Length: 227
Image (cartoon, rainbow, N blue to C red):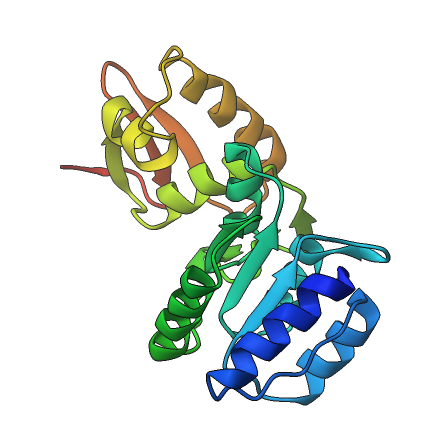
């Protein structure tokens, strides 16, 4: 457990140990990083803001190192954007302070039952490779630095190569259900992805299907399928 508030940490330790859990506790990212790399825990409880860093970044490091331990974030931040950041960083659950100990205990039991998440296989289309677990994208020898939404859109297309996808389907699969902006936002992100991918041989291309939507066409493929 990573928590820099000593009083809260001691309360949680007493409660968890009373329920029969074996708990190691630290107050710094550096200590948590070392322990999580050396010991096979059932679950990690990470405070988001600590003196030497943040839990989101530590979680991203764990996922990049293929450490699949379930992660529960503890934070006073209750904005939707912060919850999204936590999940995008590879977290499994998010509990906002202040909280009831009984809720923390129930969430931990659920995560322990679930166990480590299976690593999602990398998606490969020609020389384009996307790793959903680490959110790394490579186009041939280049590593692409994509925003969260760019990554989500490219991943969505890569899961359906050579299949024409309508705008409504893309919007539903990539944008939040509550998004109330113009569907033309898809065009903006497609243009940015085209620029990021480039046109080197071996790379797929994102093509426009007039009146329908878009298709990620594999290198060398002349006609996409339509569904």
